Length: 237
Image (cartoon, rainbow, N blue to C red; front, side, top):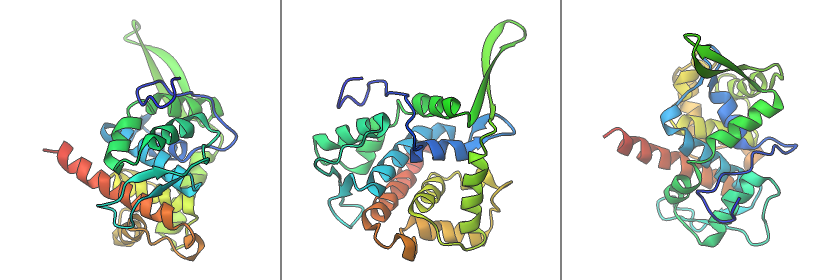
């Protein structure tokens, strides 16, 4: 993979710790259909998860607390070891850029390597088959690691039961809600006023006492989520 080239194919090698992008894609997986919710904007959501992950790990920062004026900037000497995160960090390290520019640059090539990691970990299972007995096809199904169930339970605890989120769960919810796909999880997460109100708070950066020190991550997640709104509006025209 060429460094600093957003069009290069990213390394699929899974590391010990799953990225937020992996967790996001796994949550968006629909076991009943073998598809992903929000497929049309998935590359923006995955790119947003990469940025949020870098912010939580204190590897990128925002140039301003005002989201409409802020740009994303890399923190010097804070390159991550994970190949996917490293590719995103290297692009940001070239120069400060606004969120939408970063999302559009790093997002298009992320789906395949992130999906492959989920398959490699056993979170998803890919089976090859033939449609009409002739045309080759692949079908995804849920694996038996229990990781998706754990993530959904964490989201449920925060949105329904009012638990205080960890920074990662808060960012995950903000991204899913900001991308407009939380309603797709209605069979597992009730789509009601309580859940919507809490998700909106998380999207705006109100993550609670446990994440009080994560100012950059909260600002970054809010910038990304609000950028999703702009992107969705443009795409719908």
